[in-house]
Structures are given as C-alpha cells and as structure tokens.
Length: 333
View (tube, rainbow, N blue to C red):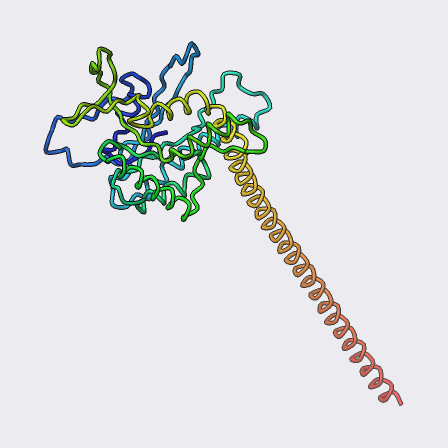
C-alpha cells in the first residue's frame, strides 16, 4: 500500500517500481473543475513481475485523495477499514468447516508512507497516520521527491524524522535483527537498511542515455539523478527489500503478529458481547421469575382473604342462629 498526499510522486513511484504503466496519471479535461477534490479512494492494482526468473504477483494499493482535506479523519478510517476487512476475510475463512481452495489472501504486508520533503520534521498528519496504522500493517516511512533536497539537507531531514518517530513511539518496520541469533550477513544487511530509514525516493518513468547506456533518470541543469543508482537515492535498495530479501519477513510479521493481535482483539470483543448478552438474558430470566413469584403470592393472599371472609360469614350465621334459639327458649319458658 502506498499512502501520501497528492504531488509527492506516488503514481510515478508505483509505475517505476513495477516498470510499467500500472497507475494512470490523473488528467483533468476541464480546468475549472481541477480544484475539486473527490476524497480518498482505495484502488488496488495487480501486476505480474519477473524477479530474476521468479514470478511474483504483486498487488499495489494506491490511495489517491489522502491528505487533501482539512479534516482527514475519514481518510484514516477508510484505510484502516480496508486493512481490517482483509483480516476479517482471513478470519472468516479460518472459521469455515470446509475451506475454499481458491481463496485469495489479500492482506497488505507493507505500507509505504510518503513524507513531504519539507526539510523540517514530521507533520501532525504524518504522526497520526503512522501511529494509527502501525498496529495493523508494517509501516515504512519514505521521503518523496528527495531530489529537491541537497545531500546535507536530506541527511539532517532523515535524522529529524527518526528522532520524531522515536519521540512519539511509532512502531515502524525497522528491519529487525538479533545480533545474538542472526548471522553476520543478516545483521549487517538489516543494520544498513535500518540506517537508510526513511528511504529517500526518486521516481522516473522515462529513460535517457548516460555514457552510452539507457537509464531511468531525471535531468536537471546541474546534473542527472539516476533512479536505480544507490549513490543518488534509496529506490533500488527499497525495491530489492520489498520484492526479494525481506518479502517473507514482512509476510511473517503480518501473519504471526499483526493478524494474530487483530484476531485476538476481534474474538475477545465477540466473547464480551456474548457475555453481555448472556448477562442480559439472565437478568431478564430473573425478572420473569420474580414477577411469577409475585403473582403467585398475590393469588395466595387473595385465597387467604377469601377464606377469612367465608369464616367470618359462617361465624356470623352461627351467632345469629344461636341468638334465635336463645330467644325461642326464653319465650317457651
């Protein structure tokens, strides 16, 4: 997934990454309508890549419209909702008695967040998005259009960004390694990639001839910036990490940690809801019992009162008869 404000080179990056026109460039036939923003959209694109003879089916999710509004709360919710729906599909499939052999796992394993090359530090929207999405996806910060900064400005900007990430405790994907368990090559490779964070990116779909060879590069009055030259930007190293060296690690973290945490939260909420429903049913049952006992008590009380009335009536009848007998005896005497 590629997320970032408009104008940071998301479309160019995706097309450069896939070496194909995957995402069409935005065109507006009516200039008077160009200022109107449609809001965020989630657009997945699937492309077949051949990496050193290995076929890779890569799905890239673009998010045009992110960051274009004054209030971007809806953008956060849309992206988070999309990620969680993919987890819900997996959870639903795992719950089936008979699973679908053709089921496709559409979980997103990495999110490249494009940071504007301001040269200052992270903005509030940058911090908020990475903090919200990092529990659901491997977040990798990148600097879009990094060729707008000088080498010294870029180095200082990277340092400030990483200081902000540490200060705000944002759990990004930092190419983890264990010096005690991993081999020296892995430690060295991951340590080097970690030192490049956030990755400085330059995108270009056009080729020019440099020293008799065709390269993807941007040409400026002061010189040429090659996309695939690691001395000029970090594109080549990021691409190799995403599609080769760290692809499985990203998948493992997604499944073993991010998905499992979501699954635990989801099932716990469901269990709590059932518990509350069960508690409500118990309360309702208890209330029905109490009502039934109250009605039975009322009936018993009515019976008691009826018996008392009948006894009084009998006593009065007997007393009246006794009085009559006494009167008759007095008259006869």
